[in-house]
View 1: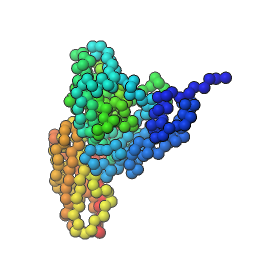
View 2: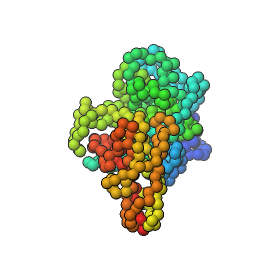
View 3: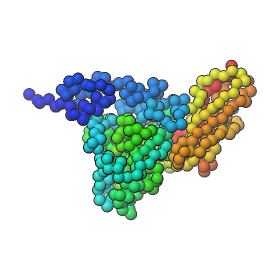
View 4: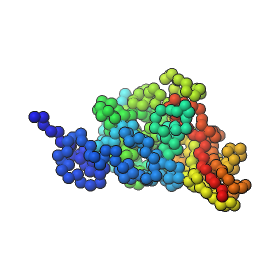
Length: 407
């Protein structure tokens, strides 16, 4: 008779945390069994998310906000988008968690415990904007494969941790270092332990920026499990796929990192414009780095109804990857004319900026659209409609629009 393989204590602990209560007789549960309550569970309760968010995928989890839910100046967990490529780790134990540095371009491999990271190095807190490279994919035509994000795969939370540059200084890197690649504890959808769901990275120059963190807190608390607990790389201003969750290893490379989702068409766009629907050779695709200028109207909610003669106050956020937003405008005549918004400076580099305006020039009753347009510090403005097509539907930074009716 085959001996039964029972669940491990660490895995049972993770399941108990997810369910929020003790699993009676949990010790007799088969090792690979998934409780019914966690089979396509209620994601809003499971991840403490606002019920107004949209679930795009459950295996893996991909959830986005709607524009009006992102009105907070600092994005709370309740409305922060989830973009996963694999399965969330089931055996997180902070007492045994460690971060390893290895690769061709380190002097010697080195391992840090969580306690060492928190005690040995100075901690920093920055508000950093993360946006999925595919945010806005649903608007592309011909359609692009992948999660059909609309506008809600963006967030700007406060992250606390240690600077990656301080760790690299402590480890010691060679002069030939050109890239870092991250590795994590999430599981491939196939559950094949030899496959990584995602292993991306950034050039060494980005790794050495002051705001690039190895983070262990989000908005002053432990990072939620869905967002990378207990350790996450944060590289603000770049596609969020560069900010690896559940971080347990960093490889310092003497070449561009070649991990999962670093090759082919993943997080790459044509180096030169192509016709919609056209095929692009891999060698003609360029890795996405700094995200383009973009903005979002978070108040009022699209579909607002005003009385004739009533003014409309709008507000929202704008961001521009590595750059700063220098100008913010709105239009109520489908882009025929534009008026200025009040634009605030970012609280720190790579944080989004807040804008506001009062619109009092609706000429008569009827249907209107309010369009928002940001311009970055190099003078590049958002396109009014969909930008250049690309095979994976990345980098849609077209103007955000809300509908208004004057009665």
